[in-house]
Image (cartoon, rainbow, N blue to C red; front, top):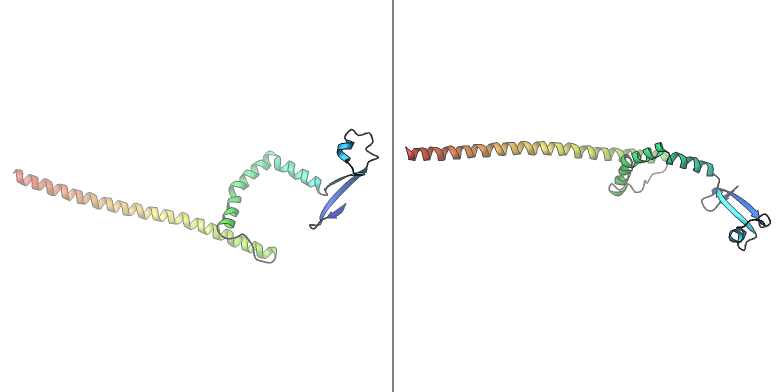
Length: 155
């Protein structure tokens, strides 16, 4: 086990000298010109494999679909349209506060849009009703006036 690179990742390394590979048919393709074969893998390979099994299970696929339809669109909206590309705070508690405030702003914006639509459409329908009622009365008066005038002339 060793720590690799700038990220200080924990790795495992397996080495085999070319003497071990004498009878191997893939020796020339595998070793090429080197004197030993090195295989480096992450120290957490078991956890990765366990996670891959969990994600690829039926429940994992269901949960992924659920997350993609509920949570990820919110994060996309927050980052793309509400300017939350960076959280300029120090510490997880402060970042958590920022995320809670952003979620509240998102929910309020959604709620106000929903309530405004209902109010506008209700007011619009009411105005349309009054406008139609007024037009019907005007047509009725016009019709009756013309009918009376026509009636008056006939008699």
